[in-house]
Structures are given as C-alpha cells and as structure tokens.
Length: 264
Image (tube, rainbow, N blue to C red):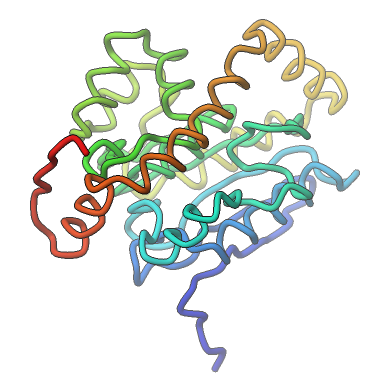
C-alpha cells in the first residue's frame, strides 16, 4: 500500500489531448502546501510545453476543492518573499510570464476558499457543483489576496460586487458566483468533473493554435495594469505579514476564534 504524503500531492492523468490535474489532500480539505504549489506549477508547465496536450482540467479529490493555503506551512515562504511557484515554472494563477496560452477548465465543489477562487478565476472556464461555499478570507487574517482575486473579481463582477466579498471575507454560494460571472455553469454535485472534462474535450477538438491565439488576443484587451497590481499585492503582503494584525489573524485561525484587530 502506498503511503500518502502528509503534505499532499497533485495527481496527473493524461486522457488523449487532455491533462487532468487533481488536487489531492482531502484529509486536510485540500489545504495548499509549498509542495502542492510546486507540483501544480510543474503540471501547468507540462500542459503548456507538451505538444500533445491541448487543454487541461483542474479538479480536486474529496468533498472540497480547497479550504485555502496551509497557513503554518506557507508562513515562512511568505516571510521570505519567495513566490509560491518557482519562477522557472508556469504560474497556475497566471500573474507573471510565461503566461499560459493553453485553456484550463476548473471543476469546483464544496469549500472553495482563497486560493481556490484565485485558481478558478485564473482558469478560462469554471464549472461549479451546486454546493459550493466561496470566500476570499484574507482580510480576516490581516493580509490581502496576492494570487489574483483583487484583480479578477473586480474585472468580472465590477467594483461594488467585488468589494462586497473582498472587504468582508464573507461566504457566498454557487448561485452568487454564477451571477457575478465567476463560474459559467452550475451542475448537481458529483457531475462537475465530468462536465469540465466534457467541455475541455470540446475545446481540445478545435484548432489548437487558434485556441491559443484567441486566449492571447483576449488577454491583450485587458491591458497591462493587472500585472502592476499583481506585483503590488505581493509587495504589500510582505509588509502586512510583519504587522500585529497579521499575527493576530494567524493566531485566531489556529485557535478557531474571531480575530480582534488593532490597526497595527
């Protein structure tokens, strides 16, 4: 019997021209560790550089897509200012070059917190099970989103709709995510992965170079301001992580209580 790695893993399965990428740490609600970020970067790099792969599907094992990052494991990486994904790999959040050109479809279920939303919004199409619980919780931890939520939630939903969820850290459901344009379809729980595979398969049947050029051309319409914002979010978090409020945010998370912030 194979021993499971307590730090999780990203399982890969090639299905014809599709690469299925499975987040696999269900015993910890798929909380992301440095190892998992590294392996997901390797997976996206394989998708982008393999001539026989035309599209990818990102999904998760178990009841939940992800409860977010494993804060204790990620804290040291953040304090050192190191990227979650090494610079020589394709960034799954698509915030720095080389920007991904091959399409990715996400399949979401259950708890989808912080990095789960950011990975979903960095993909091209998202399918949500009808039981999803979304939340961008960073303000409750004394930090800000640094993997794209401030950029893409505003882009998709408009300022007020984005700020409602970014500034409260409150939960919203699949129907609200659909209303805001964060997900493109809602399906009954248990059907999200197969629907994502079906849709990715439809995309993979089209002319690959035309699909990639479409993604690149559509991205040009967004301009370059988002890249400035992406760099700024990481820099701001490097400062915020040293504050009393960030320490209180981590402590309240570990102790499962509401944080008491003081603005320092």
